Length: 101
Image (tube, rainbow, N blue to C red; front, side, top):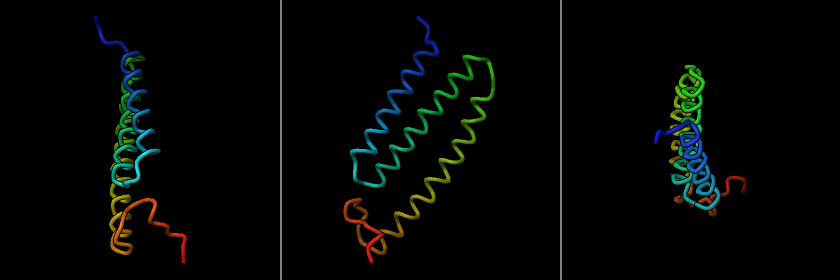
């Protein structure tokens, strides 16, 4: 029994769903960033699987760009979390409201 493109796409959909549920349920910003990364990696898996299915290199090129964007997103996001923690002494999503004066 060979692993087909459909198997990869089903796995990608499951991983993406787990990431969406994590973003909606969790309140810790670091866990939310991890769930966003899980969603990005699920999309990367589907890009590579479909690129392999159609015999093109475009899927892998998109993955490299997506990984670069994900690395930049994590570095900026963690910087924002550290800045919020230094000013508010908490990183709980419910307690942090930057719109208050």
